[in-house]
Amino acid sequence: MAEAIHKKLQSELEKYQQLQKDVSKSMSLRQKLEAQLTENNIVKEELALLDCQNTVYKLIGPVLVKQDLDEAKATVSKRLEYINGEIQRYETLLKEMERKSEQHREVLSSLQQEYQRAQGQAVGKV
Amino acid sequence: MLLDMLYIVLLVVKDCRSQIEHWKKVENDYESLQDRLRTLPDKLSYDIMVPFGPLAFMPGKLVHTNELTVLLGDNWFAKCSAKQADALVEHRKKHVKNTLDDLQKVMKNFQNRADFTDDLEKLTGDTGDFADIREEVINEEEVTKGKPRLALKPNSKPKQEYLLELEEDKEKKEGDEERTTGVLSEEELWARLDELERQEELQDERYRLDSTDTNGEDTTSSSEEEKEADGGSDVQVNGHQKENGWVPSSITSQMNGTNGSHPEDEEEEDCNEEAGNGLPTIYFSHTAEFKKVRINTGKNTTLKFSERNEQKAQAKRKKKSGKSNGHSPHESYKITSPADIYRVFVDLVNGEPIPRKSILKSRSRENSVCSDTSESSTADFEERRAAFGRSWSHDDATHSDTSDGITEEESPTGTSPRTNGRFEAFTGTVIEKDPLPCSIPHLTIAPPALPTIPERKLEEVGPEAPQEPPKRMSKFKATRLHQK
Image (cartoon, rainbow over all chains, first blue to last red; front, side, top):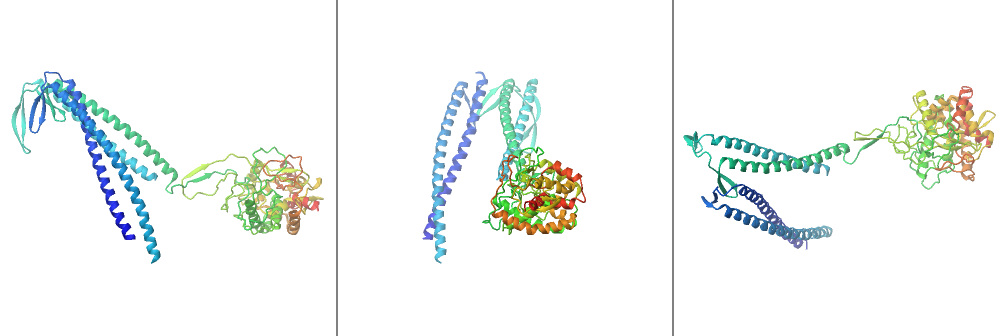
């Protein structure tokens, strides 16, 4: 009996750990997105400072490709929106994962209690 | 937990600091870049040493000095002039400054928190939740409330009649000579009993030694006796090795452990006179006034024990006698044991202090404690005070045989009155916390020191030496005797 509980406990523990890892991964991704967000904001502002005369280039791989200023502005705005969307998505994902991990935690604790009880009983019996 | 908090806060602070440093460096770089940008277009071309790989340089020329390709971020570039680049740099610097400011704010907040936590920790000391609360006791001979004594016989009824528990009145002493003793709580009474017992034991010795008066004697002895009669007296008296008899005070939280310190002197509020054990110390000072202890001194008078007076007395007494410690706050009436009470409440008959049979009974007018006080207080009030701590025993001792005789007398008589008193109806009023009107005759034990300080003083001033012995008997005794 104790053995079965023990096994269950182990499996639950593993699942929980996996979940935790996912959570942390999502967290880091989200942080990256946030950095990109700020950067793109700055780019947008700086593009606003420029006038039409300056040529704008975009680095695609090893190539600097000429871009139109307006186009660049548009692109940057679009990118900004995209990043915002991504962040939102990650937010929800993180919440979900958090909830799941909470559930797992509870399950784990209950299992642990059971296990201990079983252990106690086993010891008692012995 | 505090430590953890502190740790985390410190970590955050450290992090903030490093970040701030980083951003400051960035700002400096931008500054130097701006300088370069301003000087760059001065010349059409510059001769420079061009870095050629990681280890070599090559002479070269820097041309198109006004054409700059600026990285805007996120793989976006823009070709612009030096001035435009300068503007861009300026714009970036603004961002950096904002970041820096935020970081500074955060750091300050966390720093404050860390400091606060630090202070808190220092306050609580390494011991965590313990702090030593000390109250400086200026006047050690203050009224102490009944020492908490462990009642070994919790079922025994503490004597209520004696007002052994002198509660500290918040009233000012008006100089009346009435004293009302509050009713001690049971435990305190027991504690007091114990204490008084021990004191009584000591007193016998002290009687021989001390030459001070025994205002307290009677009271204490009587109280002691009474307590004994109470049948209690298994109660351990805590820390009463002190010589001071003190009127059992009321509910203070006397520390049992105040051996050696002056339990009596402790005031209501748990003033812990004992030194802390190296813990952070909180100095406490309480401002409560002593309650008055009203003791029925026979003549339907009650002696009011004014703390102030007692303190004064105590102070004086202390000066006089180096020994007194923890003296009864009450002036010379240090009642630390039932016997003391009897000693204090001595009926004065023909100038002789006669122990009263029962201090519960109202004494006749002539034997009012007040008058007794005169008897007993004829002794030097100061002395008495001083002696009070030593108390009754001292008094007896000083007084000589009479006192001794009296003491001895008291004991047996004390017992009987005590027993009597125990079973007699209490005809007086037990003053608990409310000061009884003076007009009400109550059987209260007024520590002799109390009653009439003026009276006593007079008496003290009066015949001192010769009268001391008789006085030692104290009014209580006298009253008692008289009553009998």
